[in-house]
Image (cartoon, rainbow, N blue to C red; front, side, top):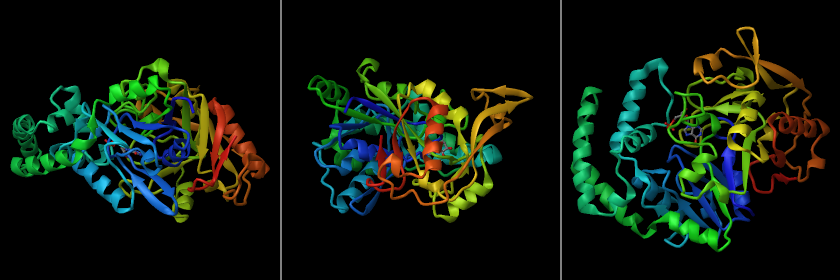
Length: 423
Ligand code: IMP
């Protein structure tokens, strides 16, 4: 397998976890480059369902090395809990199959509390964050006042820096009307987690470059999706990292010319968790999917908002990310929907738009222009080849690929590895 960047082409939750798991079979190394434990990748492996938040899904396969890159924000307590949980399920995880960048920034309890307080105070204008402290942690990173894994590896230095940060953040929390944080408690629990993480900490940039020299194949697993990107998403209703292809380079230290292909993952319809514009949102479709037990968030359990496939958005995602190949997931979610609508343009103030406007309020006012397609009214979940899909389903996925741009290479018709069609 070539060095592959895997990207969500919509608003996250595109079913990347399963596609990453399937592609990992051909990769040597799987790397996370951005985000934190706001992500939730669900993978079904040997009948067990794993939900991964920080650790790359490659950990489920033997002989693969997983890397948490410098662009990720790491909550050490959450990472230790995730490690313990996976070990309890029988996985062997040590410094040989998991590496954590010493440059990755830390998520601290005050980040979580500030995240929560800001959301509370925003009222109806809230972002709908996962409340994992992601925004405030990246905020500290950009303000050059963050603490990193390398600090945590030096206990005396860490404690000194932490004390100053807690003082500063307790003032902020007080203004927000929240309880102050105890330095002693945080210091104790973080240093203890730090010792558990010490065997995994490394200069992951050097590790990845050596691996490239030895011809290893690397899979860069994206978290969240294109329209949650801090630069290209529906700002301010976004996460705080670069979820687009460029983030794979900055978040790992692997240069762009070493990347061979970009695979965009998109659902056969559209979903979003949290607030912000979703032009093709459709209540009836959401009700139907929720009734089937589908579309509940892997991290927060929230019911996802659902809508028709938005080809304006996915075409834009193809452009930004340089998507070469496409994976369409959750096709089976539309098995009994007829007709199926596909958004092929937006109308705003009487004008037809081919690209999403930058302004979130304008995007919210965009009216989708739909093209209706015939449904197939039968199950697709046991199809192993494209030719085994009903004709209407084949026409549907081909149309989505044509509208989006990029070569269709994978269609997923269910959550297990076996329910994957390779083209
Ligand atoms: P934050 O990343 O927790 O700050 O949340 C910012 C926005 O990104 C919110 O709308 C979240 O619901 C959304 N978000 C964050 N992580 C994910 C994810 O893994 N899947 C889908 N949405 C996400």
